[in-house]
Length: 211
Image 1 (spheres, rainbow, N blue to C red):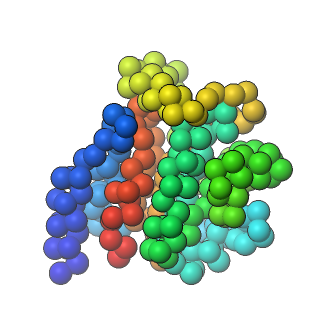
Image 2: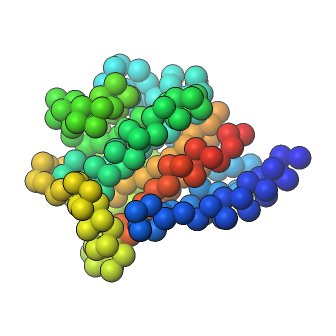
């Protein structure tokens, strides 16, 4: 029965290949059906990492689905776009019982001001200047060619037209972003190393059933 639901879900989501503001969105990876889901999450990283409010990721994950949103540096238009996309869907995420945690590379005072601009300063966040969590979850770093594709240029311009402008604010410019959903201590949906030309489809992720 579970396998049947997964196959139906996969077919349904493939039909939902939507485009946000003309920008291709990433969908198939969220629906990748893997045997017994993916390997367990790096437990030590979850136990050691604490949010700005003092809670561990492990304790948050024990309460329900955990959505880790790994961001690029705050000056990146694509980073700003991801935060705005989450902000627009926070009510739906809360209703689904999902806890959103932003993982970033900046000092907490700078983070408080940044997230406040998008009205999500109350959501959980982790300052990971040493990129410990990024490495534990194998979030990729950009390659020299990552910026050179036509799709990447279009995505950057699309984000900038919506007011997400580049700035020099520190952070590692080569660090890529990622979106990872953890359920019962295992990764069941993830978007990693997709390049700069695609935009995470949070609507599709929310539509994916939680096992």
